[in-house]
Length: 337
Image 1 (cartoon, helix red, strand yellow):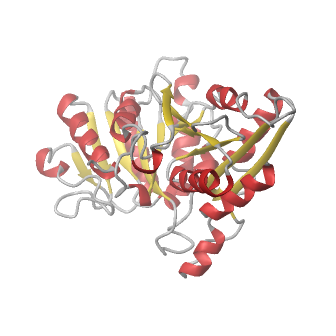
Image 2: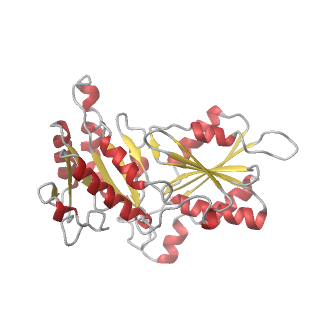
């Protein structure tokens, strides 16, 4: 069974084979090393002139890639650790994301920035963060995050084909995860629905009417699914899960549809929403999702599960205490119902 890493690597190979405008650039991505997380392994051997190793300057990598995109190429820039997206903020926010608007549609910037995010590997405060929330809501920039559902490679190919800049967020723990399908393994009791033309969302519907909706993305789905199974098996509480690939711009239509299915027995509709993310709790993705849901859905009850507002520790017990766990999701769900 293919893993998320294999799907992403295959997608990059397909993009290089099928489109001579595609270039890949980043730090230490050449063979035999193939990048810190091996997503680019094998590419430089096949395409030595279009897979480019760079100096250690994230701002220079993305600045050069933006220039390449302006000249008609389709660069894919790898940031070795997602924590370093702070160093590319000027190139992305003040340049790549705005050029289309500033030059009245006369230019486009088809740039993809891949960023391995997230903790749970003991890498400490500066190599374990989930900083994607810093780029949500930037006009002209799309933010995507693959999960083990669907095809992460197809999502990456759609990002490369897009004519606007994309921040592509890959959680480090996803790389070795096998691709998942509903109806198999611990998802046997759930029905999988998907939608979205380019950047899909996934809805996992339990076998009975749901009491709450869990909204999440990326690796967080692994925690949400473990929590949903415990809620179902141990507490007879059924949760519907909505897993997003596109984090920004927001399209929460599938979430609103799911919330309409949450019920409180004997008293009609009662909408319950639980958001799950690995970024810090304050001013995060979940807060914006909750705010938009509250504006659109009356009678909504909300809980948010996220990392504590602290730097991430190296020591495993401290890291576990700071980052959200499946039991945190279970506890939040129980408080809702």
